[in-house]
Image 1 (cartoon, rainbow, N blue to C red):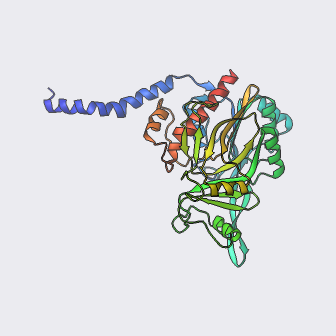
Image 2: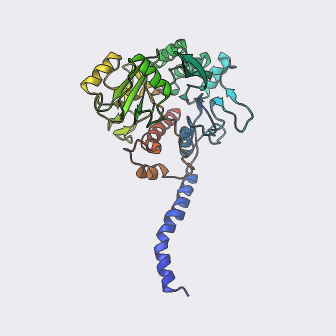
Image 3: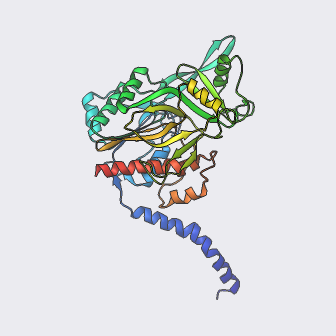
Length: 393
């Protein structure tokens, strides 16, 4: 016989058991029930610094959760299914797997079998070297591997010509990509980089915030009569020619953190939130008229900040995510380091996880990198993949 006390205990415990045991089992069962979907991707990531594979792990999570597979019906593996830099870890020394040894015919054949090309990062891998200047030592990055090369450009051109879907992300055009290859990329995509990249820092006092690189402060003071930016939040803009400019919160702009704004009805997805704070690296690009703006950056500059932007040749607003038709496919440019996720998302094999986690992560919390993933990156990338799959079929 079960005692009354035990009955009461079980009655109270059942909901908890249901939440932590039954719900996950049901969620996993539904995920297993859904059919796999073949989508042939080529993912390029030249900035892989360690086993975390942070520059593309988020994309692979979306692929696996949505059950997109390779031609052989196996799931994409973030450790092996990309072109780029493979750091030392499981293997004794680093390796590079790219298009270097591909002939033009091999590239054409490869593109013919693809549905989508996704370039998550081409910055590459650097090592710091010491350089003496004015009796002080500065660490200067030296390229080990990275940047768009001629073979990459050939593949991108072929993908456009064959009306494939192509997605390129922040830093595809910037250093260490050569100006010649960048110009080719710009002409193919119909996008022009202004030469500026930017980033938000929640504190410009380098004694309080060690995330501000020393070389940025060193070069800024060198260019601005020894002055540095006031303490407090700020934006740093870096030009490819070495110029560094800064905007201070309240004095130069009024949105403390740069905001990504998406119209309620936009060319990609109504699931995107209207406003998402974004505190990471971005680049400022100009787009041809046939592009449609999915989202744009808004820092709400003051009159003083607007003058600074104009002196830098920058507009009041600048694109965050854009898209245009490419015959059967589409061309996308994501002007931010969106795929870079430095947290472990756990297993992707549960239906409903995006809805569940989205409800637990406030969209306004810019310090929570997972919040950006669930509220912006996941719906954005899911729709890109869905559209490519639909176009294929």
